[in-house]
Image (cartoon, rainbow, N blue to C red; front, side, top):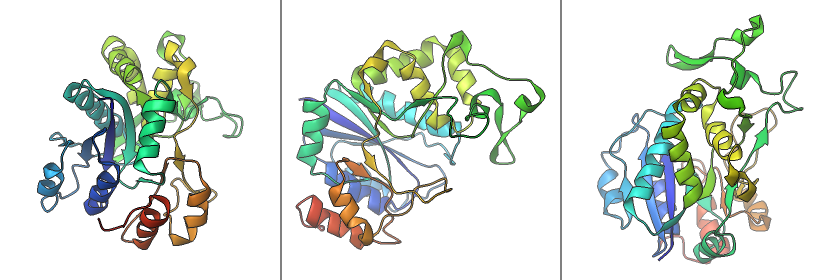
Length: 288
């Protein structure tokens, strides 16, 4: 039976992650879960491992925002999903703070049926006109390294020393989360193995989790089968680096959205919004 592997990157609120899994669980769903190495999972891992078709990755990486470790964790999850089940036809990357806003049957029908041969990946080429004078090219041209526990730019391009992608590839940027066909995900893993220079280059890019997959996929023949969407509803405040936490006041917008998922939710801020999503959008009791 064709199935979807949901790859979940989590760093907090593991009870909320379990709730996310429960809402998507079914015969056509598989889950690969990576939990940040800095998160204590002692009280939650037995319950998570006990769920059917859930693989909790043993190798856990510290994955601070904007780090290449996020790319590594994602690649680990892709490889584990492809190795675990030949029936996986699609891989969908989620954060632990995502939640479906369409019923499971609708999600599965869309991703495995209507658009089963399509990958969904938000993307745009760099430079981008509305991203300042350099259009975001500093993310590519500058060396970005871990210093003092933070990712920092060496700002080498300001003195005329600019990095450029190997093999004449064009840089692409986009959101971190996506939904790929199996063939697209397999192409990503092959590219990492066969083009080590590209992977090494992107390791030192700025916010590499928003460049790595876009640059590989959009420079490949598979680009013709990619829709520029991450299938999510998010709400952003101007000038912020992260989407706002959604609350019950956002329900009308969630209800009107054609997106499959929404982000971000935080049960420590507003748990009732998920209860309302369950009952009003997913058509099911929130505590089943």
